Image (cartoon, rainbow, N blue to C red; front, side, top):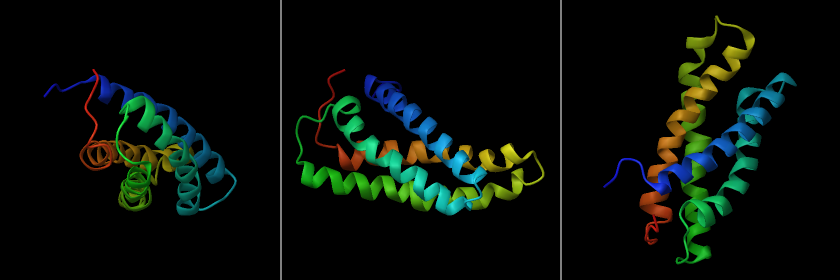
Length: 137
């Protein structure tokens, strides 16, 4: 197994787009005074809606597999990362950034959560959601 594949690079590219949109949305909501968890839920939900079609068609090039099976699996796997793993990581790391600038205090825990969430999501997408595809590297 290659460490870096076309699929993993495409996953990262889609992830960068989603992450930037998530960070912008999350930061904007946080600056408006919306608490961390609702801001995270809103920003990640919007990004997840865009992520599935991009990952299915571009990243994994999933030509097989029923949409009615893949979509719920994608939502379950992605939502668990976004709505369980990210809030846990944000909570666990918030104190580490509490004495920093306001922007770092908001973004530090989120960036840490995004990094762990990226690994979580890639593993679940490759092993569960799009497991039936055959890579066309």
